[in-house]
Length: 151
Image 1 (cartoon, rainbow, N blue to C red):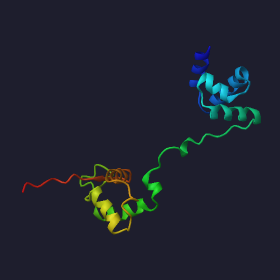
Image 2 (cartoon, rainbow, N blue to C red; image 1 turned 120 degrees about the horizontal axis):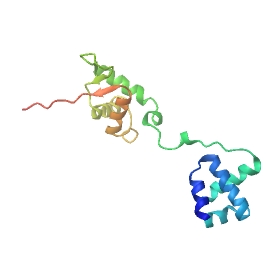
Image 3 (tube, helix red, strand yellow; image 1 turned 60 degrees about the vertical axis):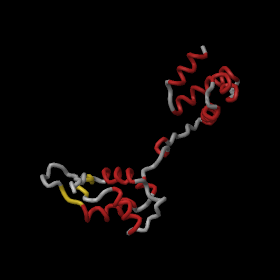
Image 4 (cartoon, helix red, strand yellow; image 1 turned 180 degrees about the horizontal axis):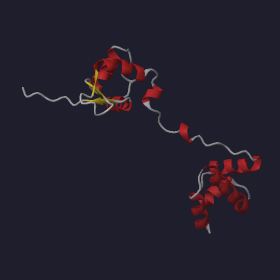
């Protein structure tokens, strides 16, 4: 029976899962989140929240969008505008007009160095060279590969 209850809870998410866990806690463990955690291995905080939701009738909203790491453009304000002001001078359209991308004749490393030198950013404040390249791609720029000359 224990495996069946745990399997059923695994298939649910959000407030439905908390409601199910609270119902199990009420029916089999006298409403004790601690006993439910000990026997079934469920998170005590989730069971407790489910019990509160059942008692009050108010369902808590899960804010999944606020989780995780935010993009560098969001964390560092004006980064996107500063990158655009640096790269637009160096950008050119596709010569054959086969795509809408702008080709930047500047490398991601050079953009990062220009942000430090010209725009006054601290080195620790800026994302890495690879991340700046990803930001440029998201902004619609493509970095051209520079051909090495045989000297």
